[in-house]
Length: 276
Ligand SMILES: Cc1ncc(COP(=O)(O)O)c(C=O)c1O
Image (cartoon, rainbow, N blue to C red; front, side, top):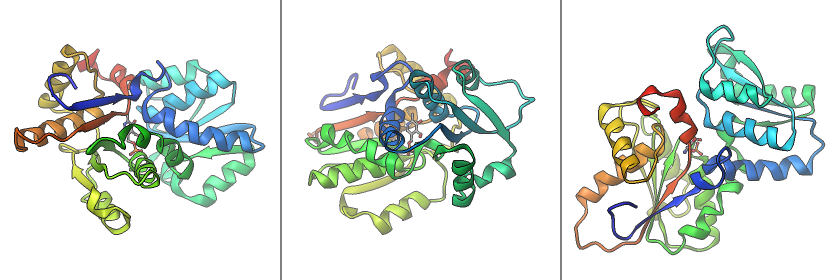
């Protein structure tokens, strides 16, 4: 980490220019499922700025798999750069208003889609057991650190990493920075279910709301750009913000080895003028 001794960054954003970060990890898990089944197509869900939809479109394009993306929004609205690129890669975009989009979690709706299209249906964000499975590999890198910090939206990445740490019997503390303003729901969930409850901490890192940008955050991103660590505005910048607060509060003599997961999302910068 630039300017911080004993703090490393796992740059999964560098895995591939288009398919990177936790999206690559989750899709690796879903790919196993695809190859084990008789699927003709992939169907997935996301908003107009979705990193997951973008990565899945790149993935489907590279592997020549038909892809249908059910997008929260309206067809008559100009496409975001994220969706424009997906369309350029051949993804079929179908728009659903907020009410119709709410059905994305409905297992019967997902089952109907799967049968109608002979499709593998990947939930929003690439979440689900397969997505978590793909994220377990982060534990291989994190197991010799005292702390691993990562950003959470759905929490699937954190869940997968925690499973990997448990498998390895690692003593690494997991610090989950929740970028969704969910009134503590994710923290409650972890409190109730985590097997290593004493090793997992969920911090509120939403900074006023999911995807909300503040002048402070924009300045932080610009500062890290100068230092050679590009951050995305929705997840990793908020992760680093929470981590900087922690650094300020801890004793200068603390000598813990800390790893931060850079989970990608840099494509999202194209959607925001402040960073282009
Ligand atoms: C770049 C990036 N980092 C972190 C996350 C959070 O991942 P999860 O939803 O698995 O908690 C996401 C969203 O999926 C993301 O796009």
